[in-house]
Image (cartoon, rainbow, N blue to C red; front, side):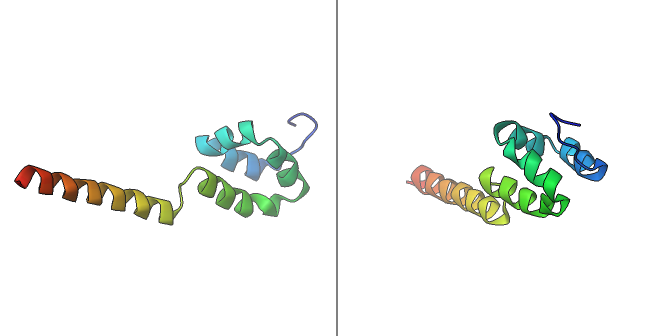
Length: 80
């Protein structure tokens, strides 16, 4: 029980296995209530965390693109 909230054991296990989930919950405690009311909100919670912490596939591709562009610019600069 967390402050009057009884999360299901499987949800708690998933949360404690991922430090990013714990960090997100520290700053957004309202999610404890959402997950307690409906444990099926966990998939929505996961999507929100990934989007907020920029962990989606799109974000990973964008970071890779920035690194490639930087490497190309560096190569062009050094080859002059």
